[in-house]
Image (spheres, one colour):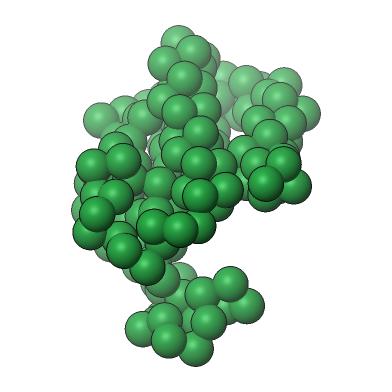
Length: 143
């Protein structure tokens, strides 16, 4: 459980901390929030949604992963509030259930199919999305 938490939660916060000076510098170069300026995109999961616990039955018994991704979403919300005055956008993004080593062959999409949607979402992010939990199509997900 600790390894999963370190991988899916702690590591993202450590990377953000390491890049914070560069993110702050980049944020000073433009106006408005978005990926064009400075952004932290935390890769989360629909499995992290506390409101959809029962709807995501396939993830019910994957406690360590769900807890780690839920904690990552809290990090996203905290960073979004903390870094707003610096002009640094922060969101959690669910890339979809993808055919990866973790997602397996039962997943409905291949990684290549999700990429255009993810890039489109990143391209249109702005201040109103700061601190939000979105999927690869730009839909807001419940916490």
